[in-house]
Length: 261
Image (cartoon, rainbow, N blue to C red; front, top):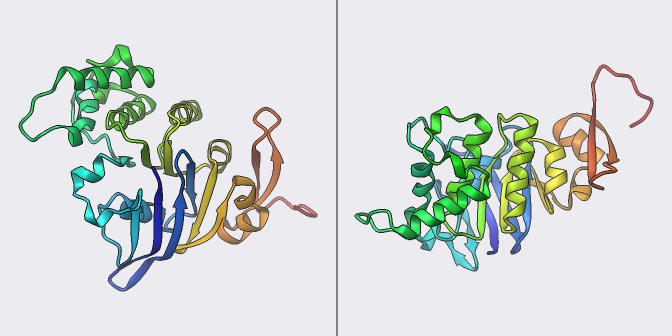
């Protein structure tokens, strides 16, 4: 599954939120979108999964304009996981996961044996096979997020769009969620808040600020001292994690005097 965004702009009451965004994601890439709060990350994702419409520009999935696809057709190509996907409804875990089969069923069809098998297999993948009859609201934040990943998996798509999938999770659950996503070996475009997680798991990063792309490239190319200073207003010391061989970001407090960084 490939994604291409061409000259995408988005305005709300003449306030420019996104300005001429151009990017492409190739099949199998894990791409993170990073940037300060309010930079346009979530707005870009919402344009791609078509909950809002661009003011101008085009978005293509496998060379097909998403504007030409119905919501059900798009759901067969892209699975989404937003920050508030779970809701407050007291369904069982299995029922929540089966909701992800929406695009593969008709309005009046009942749950098939095939649907159940796919849902149960997805719960195995996220390590919750023994939880299927539990109430969703009784789970921890990390467990709830794994349920939502399972719901995305049952859509049987090769492309996931995720809006900060580790938001509000402690570090253990953050790593568990990212490990699961990485193991799927599919195309992923995800907003990520934690820069060290972005560096560890992403093949490519898109840095956005004030609705414009500042940099696109590998984590080493994008997560530079200059970009941290200019975009986030922070100083960092960059090193290599000896266990992962990935870039490690060490933040330097503003009140700490250093001769050079």
